[in-house]
Image (cartoon, rainbow, N blue to C red; front, side):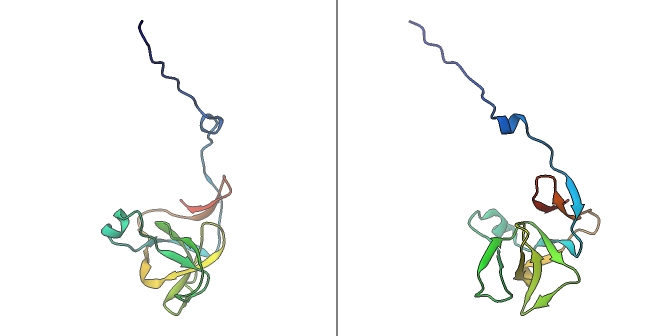
Length: 121
């Protein structure tokens, strides 16, 4: 008796119907910045830079920072922290030394995206 294995490829409806994500409208009052981390930190999957609810090291953590930050303009700094917009749409605070300028030769516009999320592109 010969046994044959069959490979069945199943596409979920969400994968088959995936729509491109694009910027719908800019978010005024914010500019793109980059997360300032070392190469070693970037390679550590357990490492995260918290965005806090207030400019205080003991304030609650809202979310963790992504590689691109949406920095409040003009820059609002307090107690060694700067204000950012978290990707959940809430304001937050990140340690000032964890923020570096975005590449001046690249284009990044803080925007509401077509999927309802927030990002820079």
